[in-house]
Image 1 (tube, one colour):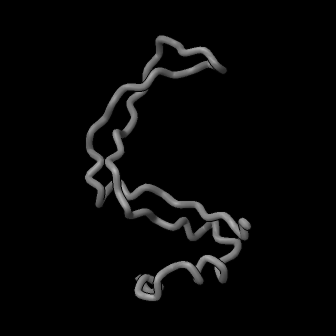
Image 2 (spheres, helix red, strand yellow):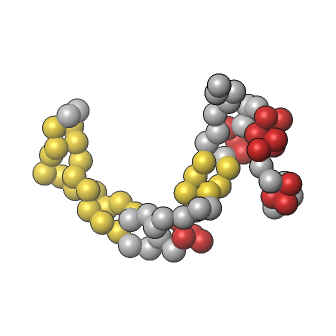
Length: 71
């Protein structure tokens, strides 16, 4: 059963995400010729927990390892 949701943000700084790539923009379902630069994210196991979106902090704290509670 799902008891709550959380918002995680990719940690670009520690993951060294410095490369950019080009991505086509879409208008509705159609790809356009316009492009925009986007970050080429590197794989990581580390994320930021968006504290401003916490509605069920008591439930979320139950699954976070004790060592990370004060980090």
